[in-house]
Picture: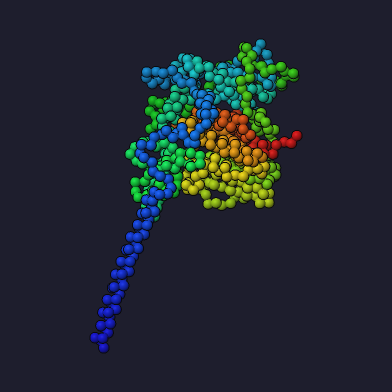
Length: 566
């Protein structure tokens, strides 16, 4: 009996070992086939973005869709309109002592013609004399100055226009818009020598912000650098140029067995270091020559009387009355923005009034975080506007909120790269022009666009091209749905430190501001002049303007959506 049992045990063990052998053999074959499939998928080049030859240059910065002759001429005039005076050439770098110093400089309010009184509607002029650290007058222009006229006790303020006479003197021109005591304020943002450094950074170092993308397939993953323009070295590039707009974007191709179409996200990886020399850094000292006030020689205040009746023309403080050279878009009075444009401002202080204005409407917001502030303001203020959780990144979106009883839909989506945010899925990288082309539009549709803050590091031609595509899409939208309300928000001032200035200086922003206003002028769009609304206000400058300023911007938009009926 035991012999028979041992015989069966041996047979059972033999069968078990054979089964285990075949099982592991089949698993190995399956794993090999799976690895082969993954390899074929990850390295497949038949679909998706194709790698570029390593000789790819930066010529695409001026490309995209073909420009018409009119658009090429427009670009020429745009660049001319924002051209900044350059310091005279020198064989060696200029010492700090010979650069503009706000502490030695001053401004003076010029007297009214004939010593007469000031009245609402007059034009006030202040003359600014720039000097260096040794107290010597500057002999050339190019300094970046800001001017503001304000009355703190009245909650009033208006932006001034600065004229560069290119001889070391400047005129700050103001339109007098309210009665009472008004005070002139002039600020040096950058000396001309610092502007020269910034201009060189913008043209020669457009990749100051570091962008990356993660490529992943199965267990393989790799992160590579991305940008509009990558250095031409021996590494091939993946081409992610948008097929509809022609907007370029590139990443280095992964070195592992990963194809270009395995890219899964986009994110900011930091900033380049050591962009300027220690000597150049002296041109960007907070409290010394970076966004520093210039003192007044004599009184900085004047008293403004009521407007004269039947006044024939605007008077100037200049010895010979000059034509009106400044036309602000609006001003603050008692903390509220008063538009001088084509809209009568309404104050939407009650959430119910806001709800009634946007009742039955779909509001689309496209762009950077400066328009996302509008979304956040409305979702915080309107109690019946409920956010729908799309499980989106906190800063990047997309976001959506609905008010079902009042049939209101509010949506926000960021613009396509360059975008300097936390990891964002490539499925959410949408270009504004393409999004606009997907809208039906109509009298129940409002579109708000703000695209500028992430373009400060690039040559202006890059920004012009992006706006050209957006403008084309806006024209198409208004052509098929003329009742659509389209609002464009301009750039705004922000806080400045050395590190911030080299990436996002107000000098970069003021040029983008000029471009966006010029490119949308003449179209049936509504402008929120964020530049003047932040300059004229007393609150500190911030990339995300403070709530009182945002409230005034919202009032401006709503006044366009729901205009006063005659």
